[in-house]
Structures are given as C-alpha cells and as structure tokens.
Image 1 (cartoon, one colour):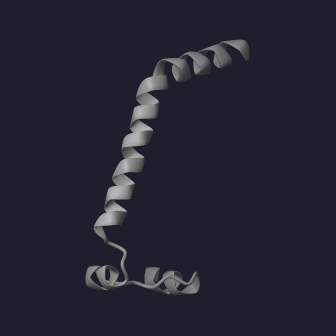
Image 2: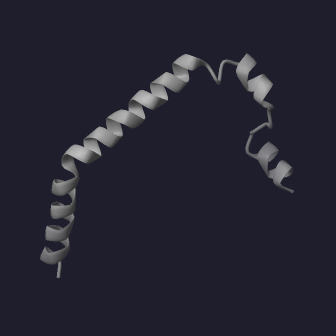
Length: 63
C-alpha cells in the first residue's frame, strides 16, 4: 500500500548505492548541510534571549 502511494505521487525507492551514483551523498553536500546547521545554531544561541522575551511579551500583550 505504501509503495503504491509513493508511485502515485511520483516518488521512487532507490538504494544507497544508487543515491551515491546520482550524486546525492557527496562530501560537499554533507559539508554544506553542516555549515547551514552550525549557522542556524549560532543564530539561535545569539538571539535566544530576545526570542524568548519577544514571545513572552507578545503572549502577555495579547491577554
């Protein structure tokens, strides 16, 4: 049933070796994903206090 739904929406099941051949598991791609993750974590770390304060202020303002 799940396989039928995959084909209905145009997805196909591929193995990890096929993914490597298609270029989906390159080191550059993994490096780029890691860089983006580090940037997002740094942003949240730098602005966490402001984010929480804004959320609390907005919640209290709406009450």
